[in-house]
Image (cartoon, rainbow, N blue to C red; front, side, top):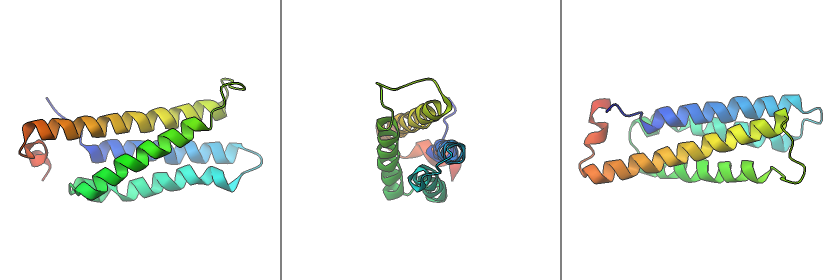
Length: 126
């Protein structure tokens, strides 16, 4: 079974955060500076891709934690009492779901690698 590597998932998630975050920022007439936090974190995650590709464990764990934190913070911005299916809330949902899916994938790949016990899961990538 072919496996998608964590750096590919990180790249996709980072691009989702970057693009959806910028769309959310530029679509808001007030253009609050805090709306640029998520695209900035997307850039940071994108910068980590090289180190994920080189299988840096510290970066892998940091990216996993940061992605989980960002997903939680993005979903936390959704107020269920005033929720409507508009662009703002849909983009927040997309960014949150993207982060949680990435974290689930990271944890799954970590568990799969531990079960194999010999890091052979990444041998085709080196």
